[in-house]
Image (cartoon, rainbow, N blue to C red; front, side, top):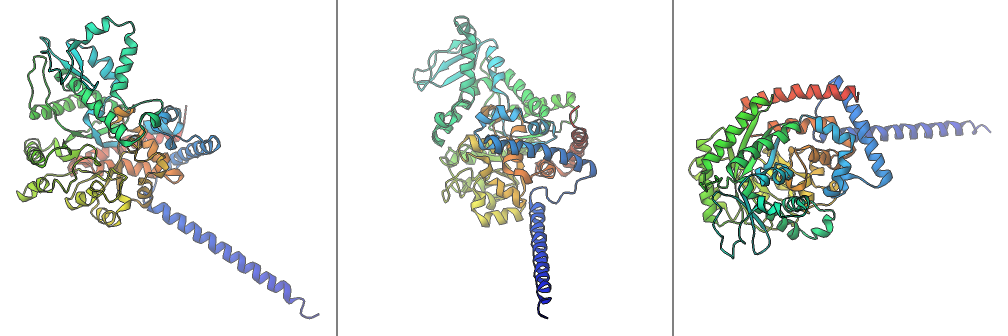
Length: 510
């Protein structure tokens, strides 16, 4: 019988061992969670007391939306943006993000920054606006007085004065709505309307073809720039870097302005805008050309970019190539042209679109390698970066950030559910990035808040919090083409607005 007391002791020892083991496992688990939290974008930031309170409120709202999404099966980032937009606008988190000072938008195409509704309701209602149809059914516009000459039949039908045309219509609203459909990709059934990437890109290109005759009319051009700045400013964006192809701008009598005139006009409009918009920092242009062109033409464009930057060093930030990567020339194809500045000892910063593809191993996919080798200041989209570990490591070492445009990537059919966007992995590892909106007007969006919502809720999931948002906003200034002095001023302006935003978020709804 003397052996019996030993059993409880053994059981106690086993229980204690299990307890310590469980405690050890919990501690290890918590350490792993903390390590991951520290690694993600913004994970190194230490929030102030008021920021912590604001973060608590924001995360409570975010978690409530996530739980509701799990219950209903309806989560905006998992839906196509055209179907998610209305749901997003009802979101408490989205309405907080609209008020958040976002710093800068660094990846925006000039023709895609203004609500297309304005082009329909304002620009097409101006005097002397004509339109015609190409043999393929595309719409062209032109302002002219006297009337433009009859075009060649293979180019366009006869020019029709819009004012006169509208007077003969039984339903002007329906016609204007048809124009709006021409100017955007929006549709009720995007999966059916755009069954593949070829279809969506085909429509995407026709949009810019259609609106070019409107936007490049000098009086509209000035107003268009101003309104674009206004829309982003109202969305708490204080600085923009615009990809601009600087197409010829024309007057009513047909006179055409130079590219230098266009750059000066951007400069003048931004200066005028700043007078009535406190805290506005400004704009810079990234001169761009289309990657469908021959090498000889891109050589001319690179030289033109060097000249423009020499004439307007404060305004022209550098050079990029735009257009669909999968069907265009690769950066490698253009290597001879792109090496011209270095061969002449001239610094021309590059801001290349690279890796905006889901075709691994193709020339478009390998644009990422050449963007790295050519020391691109930032990488536009970089959708394929996570498939290139060596490029990923070297680009991180060189501190080359990605310009992530979630809605654009989804609408142009690279990814359907934004929770599966490759930038989610990059965000979790803390890779340097900024959030931007590419061509918001073509997608039926405005400013930057919609993309921030998709990034915060979809890419970041529940782990992304106020630190993530703060880091992304600061990154947009840090990785901009502003000078170090300009960045310091911009950061101070942003911080002042950030503190006001945090205070308002802490107080909650009135």
